Length: 155
Image (cartoon, rainbow, N blue to C red; front, side, top):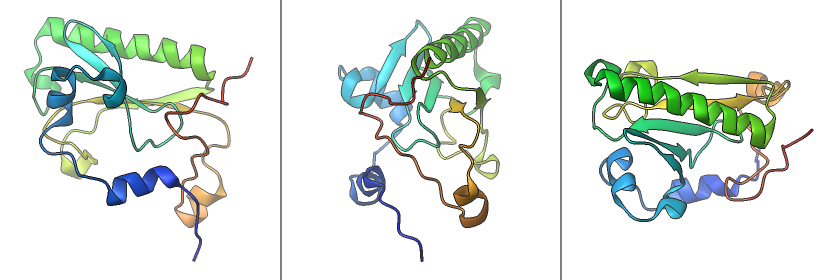
């Protein structure tokens, strides 16, 4: 059995589980730093993923509680994509990734962990970030804690 040190996972495993919808409650609180909200627009906001797939993993979410983009008004949907575009630019500046995975999981069978509130994942990628650990061992190693300054910025 492989044992990896990943202290941020212990917070998730042992920590108090969020009640309700974080995409609804977090923006209403006056606590953006603790809630990891990085940016707000009129219709959408950007939040860091507390349990990221990769360093710099962000989520963009509308304020309106809906499970799919079908229910978003045109102005909200346009703003949604403009905020994703802004997040991509910010990540490029901060982390200098070589690529991105950007996507929405709609429905539990599609992999949505919060299926009741639609959100877009923005995940920076680097060559080699899917190492043999992920491919052979189904293990992901994330070397930086999300609250620490990034060591990934290069250039």
